[in-house]
Length: 349
Ligand code: F6P
Image 1 (tube, rainbow, N blue to C red):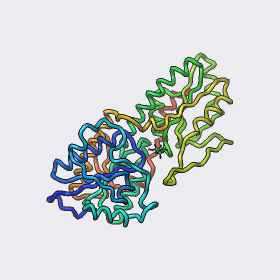
Image 2: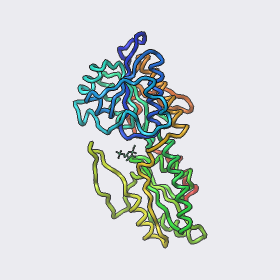
Image 3: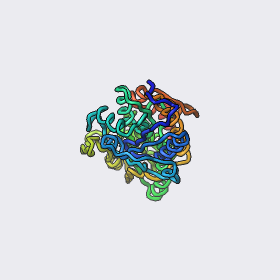
Image 4: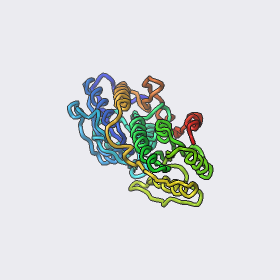
């Protein structure tokens, strides 16, 4: 679909960050603003994600507003998990602010949920372009999402540190990482950190078997084991996690690592400890890879929006940044392929 904006007059490009934050958002904001303003068009920043769009919280973003933020974590625009279809009047509430702020095309830097909302708005005639960000890396249509690389590095550094303390005490160290429905962070960081086991939602696990293997490992001269667990795996049989939801009705995960550590201690002769990395995985400065990816995504998304195209998402395909259909990209959750997971398995205890 093509938005009505003419590429020959200065355009007004709306920009928001929605869903959970991640490293690289500011680098993407900077790139969009630099590219759009260099063409004589304007960027209208929207605060706090969809919530700010519904409430008309807009702020002009000039080139000087985004200087010095390429390395800064979080998002200068703020974000929220609010969804206009669940908490507002859907496209109607968004259309009002877009018209009032004279926004020609809306750039949405979002995860799977926010991009699904963007695709729905697009199907209802609103000009929208998406930029995929998610430390969970679960968005279809792109080889990688913004923020994932940094999280993997943070978790890998943590595994390296936890290995030395586990080794000193002859312990099993369970490390719980983010990954609501997919085990991308667990698989990559577990592989990079040399984990003895990686538990992900995509693959069932057998704790009795794992316990036997770890016992054998510790009895044969190895004095530590690293078990990486994605937060979205099912609790061990007989256990349940308390149900808790956030202000927007999304379930809060976390806690399965403790249950697994407790069970592993019971099933083996060895002490187990758990470390839940939580929001450390999302905070702070992006890696060089994510800064470059954010810059390339931001520049390309700005060019797509200014060309008058919409209903698209920028994506990484091999080493090229391309555009893909937004709706198709968000249709399915991108799961860890089992051939990748089984490669990590060659190093399991
Ligand atoms: O960004 C995705 C994610 O990191 C999930 O893995 C996690 O469950 C969720 O965000 C938690 O974020 P919040 O508490 O901010 O909703």
